[in-house]
Image 1 (tube, rainbow, N blue to C red):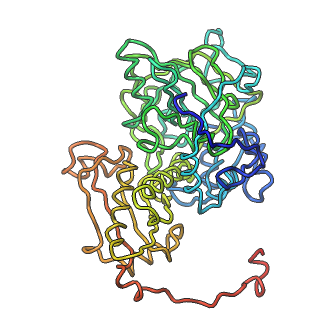
Image 2: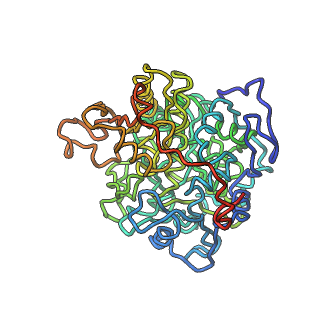
Image 3: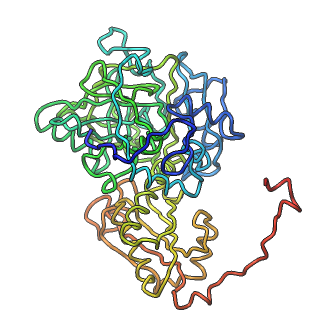
Length: 515
């Protein structure tokens, strides 16, 4: 792998203090993550009642714990395993593993409000993955080869649909691992939208700028397929570490190194059985395949719905008329595997995309403006991508401008970010009411708003189209906005919040406060 282990890095064991200061939970795969959650009240439930993976499963979890930008009523609730899947006797489906910051905190070991900072430290102190022998890879306990006469992807794995309008069954948490066709050590891992199209075919959707798509284009130019593994049911540190984006993780950076940094030990890989690629050794499910050159399909070719699936902004995305195709070569699994999925617009996407966003912004701002930015929250209403709240601590009059500079850095380091709200250190950036209070009392619209028109954003935002805004020439272009809701430094003494006496409320209401 391109990254080398820093000489000063000390590898920790589960339960020992991590060299970066947080406790490493005893988690190294999905099953150990579930066992950890079972010991935490209100964080995990199971059901043996049969559920149909087609629309019904997501419909149930919408009420249980989807949250995010899902149409109300919804809520943040426990992770949930469905043990009885209609038509799939040997499979289980887990949804919502990371659909709350409290759960992510338990799974990663950092306090809820410091998860972005923890991710930033893991990016600074990476640990590359290691290849292990197949005998140490539970992901290959059961093997189904596409050459078998009865092989059918549609009958082996219960890919769900989120809504009745979906283009087809989707794998929503498939971590695609690919490499440069001319250099296998140049590896990228990314989560992509994967729609089941046939007994051994899936379509794959690439948002612009994805590194695996660059590998695919390079292979296609050579007339070659691109071998990939699709890894599902993983240690949460692997999934959340993989959602960093450039420039924080530039082209040629293997994001599995971040998971190694989070855990203090290397992610284990194993050679695939049917393609020249590696897979996550402790995955629940691995699909081995090749992205075919010069082959395209309509995403909804089997249904004609015109829709793809509900995406993180909260809308059903349009089905893409021309997507690359993955030809499946094999499926390997653990015994009675757990298929992990998410509800597209839910809080789980906020955690997966948002916490690395917070880390990326924190890293860049600390490097450029040391000590100014105290914390960052990638807000749930933007799916963890569109809206960032940045908390700053001004030290002098020059920091009035530096705060806006921090917002500009955030927009530069995370190109899909659309809006930034700046708040002072006395504002709880994780409390939307407190942020909106700052906007009402420390913000004047035509004085404290900065517009950056005509900048690349995200193609899944329905407002970023020429039809919505005739000024833009292509989809995924927008006006980015900075809302400075901080008090001017020279007026800080006029913006001091009412101070209350510090007391121990547990003396009066012990049932509400734990000591």
